[in-house]
Amino acid sequence: LLNESYESAIMMYQNFLKQYEGHPESGYASFRIGQAYFTQIPSDWFLAPPVYERQQTHLDYAQKTLQKFIKEYPAHRLVPQARGMLNKCKRIAFEHELYVATFYESRDKFHGVVQRLEGLFEQFPRWSATEENVLMLANAYSKTERYADASFMYRVYLERFPNGGSRSDVQRKLTSLRRKASDARAGNSKKGS
Image (cartoon, rainbow, N blue to C red):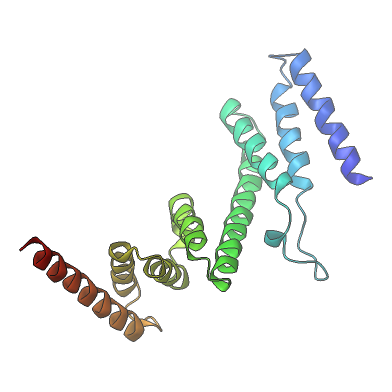
């Protein structure tokens, strides 16, 4: 019942924006649409799965409408509140994508891990560059035979996490990848002779 009232409010504000384009309250109506979508994002509740594991439709709509509001009404008094909601949306989106990447990893679907983590590193570099995520991406690259990318990420791990818990394992993997690359070069030069 509550979701129906949010949907009714969204439709009412959308109709207002269509009928009264350029009205002084257009910014408020635009904000309220984003806020209604944001309010419908499932919250964490101890008996339910975490929000990042659940359906993301309202999250997507909230992000799009809040971004549109901020872009179209940058001086509006509600922009700081919209930015706060948008940051929460981004955090949930990040956690969802990371959840999917770890799900793929648990199922040995390493191409999926690579795709999700590359997206996270591109969209959310500050949140993504953790010891666990760098290592997960390096390992997934190795499992998908993207050895140059794996070597690069293992080196990133060693540089960024000098006291990392997997340091000796990463050094061993990096040495193994160097050996594979050297063997591959030697094999290619013999073929060319």
